[in-house]
Image (tube, rainbow, N blue to C red):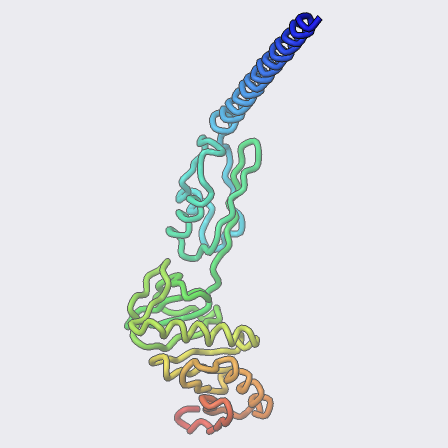
Length: 269
């Protein structure tokens, strides 16, 4: 009786082992076929997106300074190339390097064959004279263009500064005094924050300890250095509430606790 039980037990173990082996075999077969289908599907999509889908049309949107032809000719992709065979970042970088007025580029693919290049342009904000040359700069102090004279139909804040180290179209302005640009940038950001930028005529800074700005063709405000800039500008706003529209002169706010106002002399006015 015990022998029969042992034999039945052995047969049961063998059966379970064979069943487990078959299940593992079936599982491996399913994994194999699923992988095969996935590879085939992937290969199909690779062929479709890299071989069959081609660039047939390129559209340029929101470019007011450069023509569509100029933009398209500078692209690292042309008609007939794979629609998904180029990197968006390369498109943006190539255009920004070639065209200083371009701030950002958005690339969109529209099936079956269209590439849309949407341009965001820099805003001309500052005018700068370096020796005999004039330059137009963005609000981020990127040099946009060298011109014979500054345009009269565009409101530019004139920069009158210390020694300019480098001023090249497409690059950021730099001074021999490295921290001078940081001071001007902080002043400009503060003026913008308090909505004073539209009436700012110029920023004058021989160095970072001797900073002025002109306001509304009326006031020449002296800050001294950029320390406590926010406090000084709020002080300036409070004082302007007590200055009449026909009063023109110098306003010293270098000490944010005590300001002095002196009218322009006839030669200055």
